[in-house]
Image 1 (cartoon, rainbow, N blue to C red):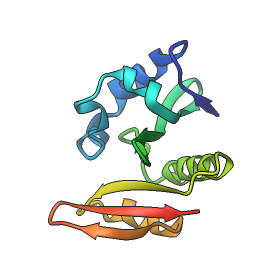
Image 2 (image 1 turned 90 degrees about the vertical axis):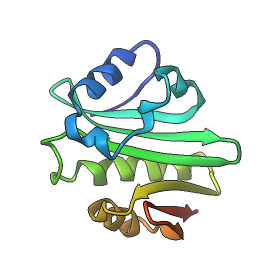
Image 3 (image 1 turned 180 degrees about the horizontal axis):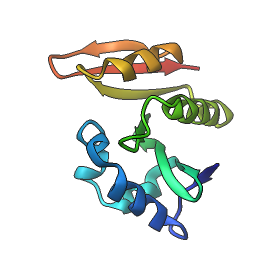
Image 4 (image 1 turned 90 degrees about the horizontal axis):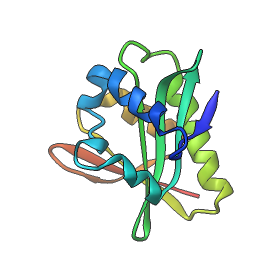
Length: 137
């Protein structure tokens, strides 16, 4: 079940971050940002299973760019949860009539790169550490 996160249920986001484990090594979004950053988001969502958050996603508006970010709880990867979250967020961007969404992915995270390519993201820039990708609507 997908739920949009706000201050009434932010405890679920806190719980996700507490149990995400090794997944937070490649999803470093909240390392330098307070949870209140969700106020800037176009969408902040969690996928719940039996009431527990197992996948996170956001569309974060930063000036003229809307950034997509996703993370799956350690131990829950490989089950199609990232694909489900991507479907949700890409459709949300389409509903909001966004011109494009963008993301950054670690160079060594090949599985995520493949997922993003399946959704139509193309490479804008490649560095020694990350790849910048964009989906045009």
